Image 1 (spheres, rainbow, N blue to C red):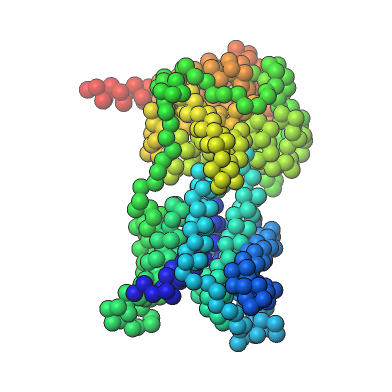
Image 2: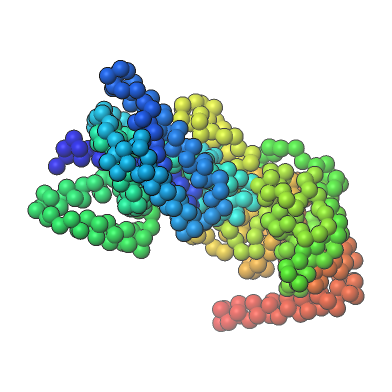
Length: 578
């Protein structure tokens, strides 16, 4: 059953599956790998010297280099205009590109057209498995590097990834280029094993087989493509061994298996193997569950207390004829805690979205930590020192609390991937430093005892605190919180207020939106009130509480709502005791 051909096919199919894995880990669905492999195979077979003149191994090495370069260049050509596409649109665009390459090869005289091209056989099972091991090693060492964590973050939630400083476009393109290089490697190995290559070797069905192999094997563990390749390659061999020769059975079983995996095992076969989680030594770091003894490390310079952090001048945002924010003038200084309050629909979230770079203003100007917002990408504003949470939590649900916060260190951690490939001690030291920073941030919000719990398994209040810890991991100068106490009871809200004040005492500037008026009045140094997109009033809590305009527009109704909520909570509590 395990003939030489079967062993080679398992290795080659595994390598091809890794070209899909390379983009699946970043949340991309690309079907262009067959095109990358096809153009790489034909160009390498044409340009590489013959084994008779150079010897078989040097010939193959030169062909592999040519193929991987050609595959990478093809990926760049396709990736640059398509990186803004997502999901099925990206799949269709890449599939069209691959089909275009196949038709191009089919109509060229130097490729032999439909007849294909003769290539000497150089690849054997030993060489194929060595190269498969090299590719698997690449992705194993990538997994726990800063680059690997960034790809995981993009896959889980792209908006959250941008907000913590990850350049999503660059990382997606890098993953795409990796896929092109690996597909090019596969194309060359296929050519130098099969002896004759034809355009139909790199058709749509080839791409689907590679995708199915990667998905069935699993994209959550680096060895998933190997498992998928072994299963998919051995399936027809098992059929033949038991005397089943029906040619339609393999694609039928493959399709059925893919459906089962998607419905019941979305992580693929590899998800049956428990994923090794990042671990921390709480005692070695001197951490305690109350979060009071060790603060996160400062890894960048911050504005001195009193310096201007945010300067807004006539800032406005329009959606068609709707004025979400109108002519807001606001100055925020370092070390201040500023609350944004106002009725629902007043423009609070729109305002902080502009400050953090998620949406551009329609008019006016804004400077945040020396950066002019508008056309500046979100990740560059985050790099300047701005991090945030969202009105609806955006966590990486399949990752643990510690891993969520570890991703948050992206801006202050050092790149380690290439050094991890070489097992350099400095890579381990830098990874340990990032891990310690993440642990301290978890400790600061009181979640150190839940470091190894998946984010989706945390209570709602803990999820809100985890999002704050992830934002703190970037060592920001400005922290924006969008309704951080939403869904919390009064005890949790009081604890959150104490946390915000302690962060401000450390020099952090905080802007937060909140409907809990009592919490805002008791926490903030300054309050800005928005109404119908306009800045109604600014001042200290005492000034805002006494402002008749604010009382008429918001505070009166908000305090009535607070009283009703408190009464309802008290009634519920009494009913529970009864």
